[in-house]
Length: 177
Length: 371
Ligand code: SF4
Ligand code: SF4
Image (cartoon, rainbow over the protein chains, first blue to last red):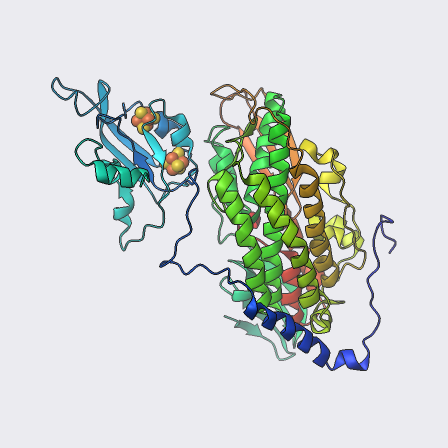
């Protein structure tokens, strides 16, 4: 069959000589390359003792943000849940009562906010959709557990520590230190 | 795992390979009819990893559905996203900024390199060489790191948005890619010395799994599988998209159509990918990385089709729009499906031991076949 193109290159398909056929030369050559790697730099990272730093844009587990005064930013607008292709976010909105201004920044807040981490595909669309900078994807990953229900993260797991009352934990969660 | 289904006195019997078998690279199930060691017929049985992505996309908006397609051909996730983004852009008729086009193509080629890398390691392991697997993953790791730094994830990059890319490149992106490319050329030479030039390996591959040019065309093969049989079908050359029209690269073609030819096509393609990246990396123009698009995308009523060249072949995205925010119907033409359908033609008449070598050079990704 004639090729449909003239740009093809021919491969040497000559039968092998005796020396090639006993394979010794090739085995030796291969060994030489493999053994030379003993003296090269090791690319292996000894996880979990050693960890590779992630870049700031890494899309890991979600964090619900607070503002400088420790108030929750989320206003339960539901834009993140709409944007989510995996339908991983559920929330319930509640009205802020008088006297709760120190807890919630907006007049409406999320009484319940849950992300199913098993559904989530870590695409980052919720972060893009949020008008209040209330949710972002952090640099932590690899949660492991025995139970599927533990992967439904509620507000308790998602909320960043309060910068006013727990400044150290907040700084740690932000990756500032 | 090799389970005998039935046998007849004449020695013709049927065995199952898979759906869980180390040589099938995923949940591929082959029902093989054998006469002794000679293969009479191969029937791939599919559906073990069907997630109905096409149907799922019908309920997702044009911004959302792109990210689901990363899970089709997970080794060229970025190129899948690219195809979808291009198709949506075609419908919206938005002009993608030059900077975004350059970034996209560089990322595409890095993805292709990473994918071919993994194929090379896995295929060498299929035919019995273990070391290449580690070498391949070492280089692939570098690419994954570069990806992670700019896109935010290592495998499912989700970097494409209709109209451009999601974020600007990392400040060190260019420098890191150049560093990688500089070292990579030696690595290809090492691969060639370790595996390509090895006569033991060549003995396993040459003359095995022959696919003629006519068969490659009639089965709808694409990508390296078809090009190894002498079909010029590189979408990047035939129907250039983004900046592929402006870069210099060769379409790699072999005519012998056997496993070794398919192997050589991919190895040479890696060199061409390096060449493309080299041309683009220093010339990324300044400007926007994203075109201005509406928050809610609505495609006009009609049908849109876009094809791209993934690491495995031609991926087609076909969108039927009724004018709404979600596609009315979506169809993906995946390269793996057509390439797998030619497996019977390739392996028929050969020995069962050669099947692994043939399948290795097909570079099958099962989620891409099943979707
Ligand atoms: S990262 Fe994506 S999938 Fe996960 S919750 Fe956010 S929008 Fe949903
Ligand atoms: S996280 Fe942001 S987008 Fe989601 S409900 Fe709260 S404010 Fe709205």
